[in-house]
Length: 182
Image (cartoon, rainbow, N blue to C red):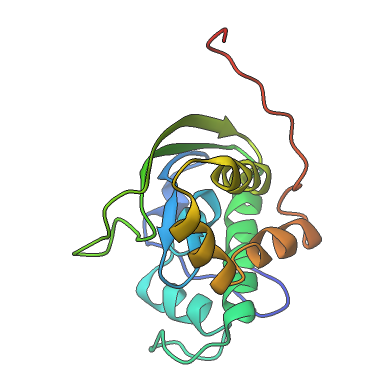
């Protein structure tokens, strides 16, 4: 799949072409490299093949090693890979982020830190940039946010959202609608 600034193409799992749409369910949480993981991380790193993951992590520089990439280029590459996924299914994709038991660590960490933020809710959108943006904004308002905010800021995590908006993956603007009547 064709990409943008850093990636010439995106390598995804072998079965990806068998589907004409996706429901992307993400546990929004911290992440050691990206600062946070949500919808965009799951449609880039999560759908990427082993080679695709290496290319994203190194901003297109290595097909076989995920190490040595520059931070902002890595974040921008995640947005670019995500855009190629959304474009390849003509936007037939829905994103759901679950915000509970939020730790600074990703679920892939074998020994994650205990959650500091316990339950914010479940959010959904057809726009992965807006969805991850509202999740970040809710983190900044949450009790117990200090460690996760520090992790996100130390990784310049919002760069993935900025670049995602710049390349047309989505918009950082959103309207939060509560559907449970409260």
